[in-house]
Amino acid sequence: MRAAVFRNGSITVDTLPDPVPEQGQVLVKTCACGICGTDLHAAKFTAEFVGLAGRTGGRWTMDPTRDVVFGHEFCAEVIEYGPNTPARLKPGTLVVSMPLTLSGQTVQGIGYSNDVAGGFAQYMPLADRMLLPVPNGLSAQHAALTEPIAVGWHAVQSARLTPEDVPVVVGCGPVGLAVIAALKIRGVHPIIAADYSPGRRALALKMGADIVVNPAEVSPYETWKTVATPEGFDGSRYAQLFGLGPKLRPGVIFECVGVPGVIEQIMEAAPAAARIVVVGVCMQTDRFEPFFGIVKQLNVQFVLAYTPQEFAESLEHIAEGRVNVTPLVTGTVSLDGVGSAFEELGNPEKHAKVIVDPWA
Ligand SMILES: [Zn+2]
Image (cartoon, rainbow, N blue to C red; front, side, top):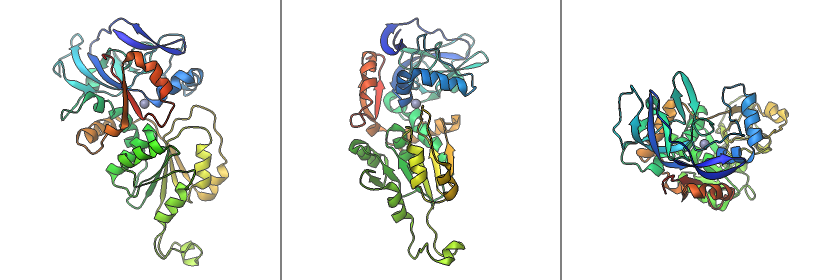
């Protein structure tokens, strides 16, 4: 099979042996696979990526001296079942799966593995029990967005929102856009979104943000204050101190940037008692002054990925039209285009999500 292989620090298209499904596995043909910001990180900061993963103490490792085929946001078609595995789904069925496969008693991640090729390859050996058939005639391209949408859905589910909360989404790349889509499903309004890029602000509106601001011109926290302050609120009154009178609506800030300095910026600008949900993946050492958190009694929560249930719910949200993923797809490339797409994705005006079609 053909694959876009990450080898010696760059992407090369090469021919690899076709995977052979084991018991419990299904050979699938990859139809569409999104390029994720984490793929760009892994390619650009490979040493940091591998070093940090090792230090988390998990069993997850990637050897950068060996080939890796990235791709963990995929939709595929059932080809054939492994030995002694009842064929639950007909060949040709379109499926999505969380990016992992089961091999005997072990779980193998897909997308950063030296042993199992990810979605930038023509075939993958997925685990039968992880497969979710794609409903409602949803296209493979749109179904492939289940994974990134699930990241936003998990972040929003983890935030324990109430209808009183006013969410602020900082950063409108694919992660921020998925958070906005999830907030819209939860019906917590108004959704305030901030990004320096006009292209991303336009996408934020399309995904369901109610108010978008350019932080170079308007502080998203001032915008929060305007929205969150009820009539008759006067912070200088004694009554307010005792919790009497009208209350400010709580601020919930989603950090969707993932570069050093952003957590500190948010903590310094956030309103008192705000909750901060860190969804952006920062691979470098960062610093913040705890004083801001102490004085304002901030609640900072880090989140990652999704549960199997949230993953399945995300597919349903897309298939039922609760999320319109169409604006997110800004480009499609063949395997030969993966290398240049990695470069182009650095430009926020040009792209949100680029989908790889390994058969184009
Ligand atoms: Zn991802």
